Length: 293
Image (cartoon, rainbow, N blue to C red; front, side, top):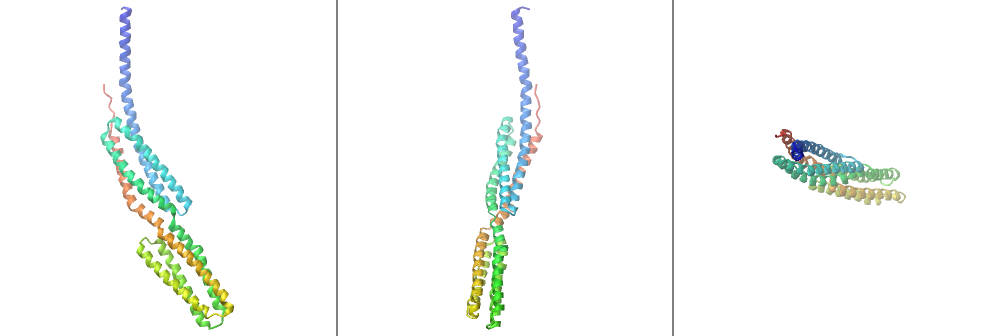
């Protein structure tokens, strides 16, 4: 064999080896992309479930710090979902998987709707206005109500002028204040604005009753007892200021609204997103890579 022919054979052999290597490498690359697509689809579902769970915990949290922490965790998981979806789409397209691409697009559309709703829910949840109203009602408002009652009871014991009338007025004022206090809890839990308005009217009527009783008491008590009556009036003023704050927070209703959205519209969107991801995983699981000669 001449040197020239030898060179031709060597070149031909090199071409064949290169072609063979290309034939082997191409299937491996496609298989790797399929494996990666399956992994991404599985991770999508995991991150989505994690995001939804963290969001629900933010809604159910009983302190601002815990609610904010879970809201942050939900947002991080949501970003991971978006990142996985963005990475998976070109991979599916490169594999020529039109059905899987359609399913991913379906999920992305539903996820976009979910994400907008979840942002609203988390913004409401971290405000915690119903919880704050509850704390005011059970804390400072309770203390002001107790101070009002204590001042009136001391007045009834110490003042001897027209004792029975005085005691009747004290009982009227104290009962009216307690009626306001009783309305606070259902107002905080209420979601219907018309019902809250009715409660507020009852509160206003009870306040008017209490203040009328105090005005009448001013004409009944002895001069020495008037400072004690003044203390009672201040306690009622304090209680009503706190009641106004409770009503304003309750009207925001952020905990009630976020919970209602989570149990209603959000659950429907979660189920739709999971259906799309489940169908995507099933479709990818049925895909097989077959090497060709």
